[in-house]
Image (cartoon, rainbow, N blue to C red; front, side):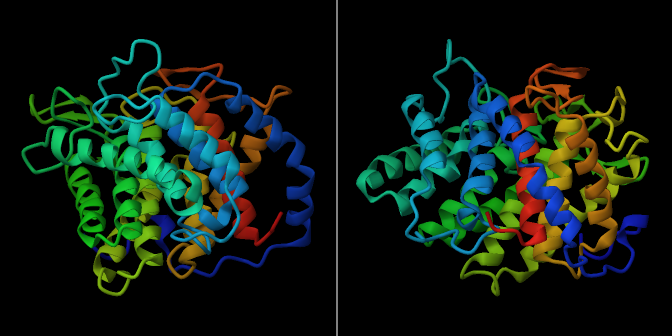
Amino acid sequence: MRGLSLSFLSLLSVAAAAPSSSDKKLFNSALTKIQNLRGAFEGSIRTSWEQGTASQAILEWDYPEYTVFGSSPFKSSGRLPVSALNYAISAIVRQSDDGRLSQLINDGLDGASLDGASSAPTVVLGMITHAARKEYYATAAEKQLNLILTNVPRTSTGAISHRMDTKQYWADAVYMGFPFLAYYGVVTNNQSLVQEAYDQCRLYRDALLRDGPHGPAWGHLYSDDAKAWYDGGIWLTGNAWAAKGIIQVAATIAKSPYAEEMSSQLTDLKFWVQEILDGVFPALNSAGLLPDYVQGGVDFGDGAASAALASIAYRAATAWPEQFGANYTKTADTIRKAIFDGIDELGLINPYVDPLHWDAVGVLSTEGQSFGLMLFAAWRDYLGIRL
């Protein structure tokens, strides 16, 4: 599906406005609070998907050149990304025998097939930046890849299931697994893996896209075995996971040697990001946050997914300002201000959804804290600030 979205957010795009001096001053004045936000997730116990999300946030904040939005995503710039690689090493030492990174926590019985792969891009980064342990990273990455391609069930359409023992689509999977496939494909000169990443995004969109109150958006969980929705609500965090995964695949292709050959795929991916933003941004509440469920569930403001989606708007506006103009960044600005004002003395974002209970407000969300750091990193890069 290609073309322009018809929602109010898809008016003719205008280039992102030049950063103002007041924005730069505001950013500098916010650094202490942002560091407290970071400390809150660094001090938390992290499950497999939280480890991967935190590693991406650290990478975006500390080493922006190595992200797929940066200047050196596929080769060493000469700077060792120490803090990010520490997360990669932790993921590897907890890799299960079947290949899932960060899996061996507590009883290691998590049934998710793709959550561990959220740490894999940082592991691949170790392959290209840390020569002393290159084979260590490479072995772990290959083990994770082989699991995904050969051992994880596939749905009737060929989509990689998000569960090890059943065939299910979870919106979360688009972030957990498919940026790794694209990134690994570019680093190892394997275009078929990059195409696979695109195909998986497409198959998941085909399965989960629903009509929402503001336009199409993604449902959360669908069982291919039962041919039934397990959670058909438009859960904000699910849409954030999907959009974040898609934009990372898009940015990977755009920076890769395959960009021209895969221009059609890139056009699709950018539109799919835009489609999600258009489907959820109009639900912004008076407090400057988006609701936990845009449709089909509770509607308290969720700072976690709101932060993630605002970060995606900044990233998209930075990379493709002709398509993602001021309509997107103005909403992102509103969300950013609300997130910043809600950070408490411990660095915790308030309010946000409990990551294990999708209809309840939580106290600590490692993914939510990571989304917050991604937001401020994306805002910084949008402003063109270099630390």
